[in-house]
Image (cartoon, rainbow, N blue to C red; front, top):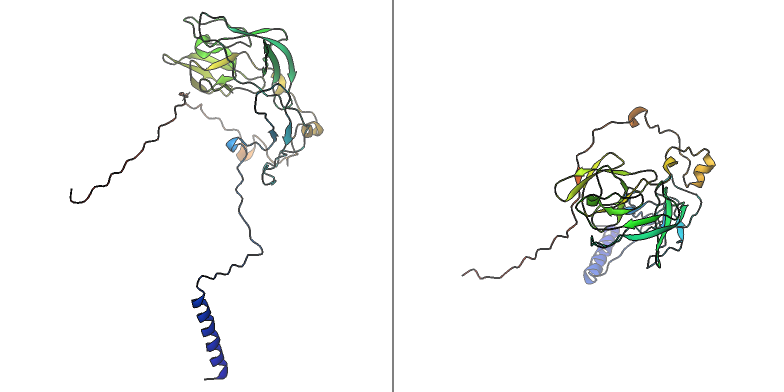
Length: 305
């Protein structure tokens, strides 16, 4: 055996003895090009739009709120998620009070509020109205025929016969007659105006579904079966011409916060063509009831029993 082989055997034996004596010693070499996967939510999931962040306060206020424009980037990582968002004019945000509260006793008169101002908010498509009652001020969505100085009435009771509401009044679905045009409809009782917010849109009360449910046709022609105690505001939302008014120029589109697109996508050409499908069945929304967590009890018993 050569001297080189003897030297190799002795060296390997020394290394083995070292690791056997120091078994708890570990060595970690960091990779130079290590890539960590960062999962970014898709647009529209979990309420993320990647357009703006509104700095809400702890208590409701009519003071215009500060806004941080995201430009299509994730606020945590700074990576661009939505390519079509960017730039735009920075607007103040007016906090909408979605809950229309009023008396529930039929012997009491409806709560009355006066319209103080109607203006356009750059963060939403429909106009905003400032209403007041006593010392209370709040913002609501303005309807098409709403004017400054009008009186709005709100009541949460359901009478035996349907009432004849005026535009801007808020009543439960069970108190309104069939054919009434509504918006800001509650999905569940007490949730606040959750459905129909876009400019010029409205829903229609179709008919009753059983003893305590009302069918409402949405702007998408879908039929929703909602509880009769869900509140709804009467009338069609303002700024009706929003969907039919052309933008006019690329500069105006940039002011709205939209980046230029490639122009390769066409709505009715090729595989992106318009598909006509039948309407889905009526969706039924029941009041949300949290499920009780069942507790499993385990008892120890001996095998001799």
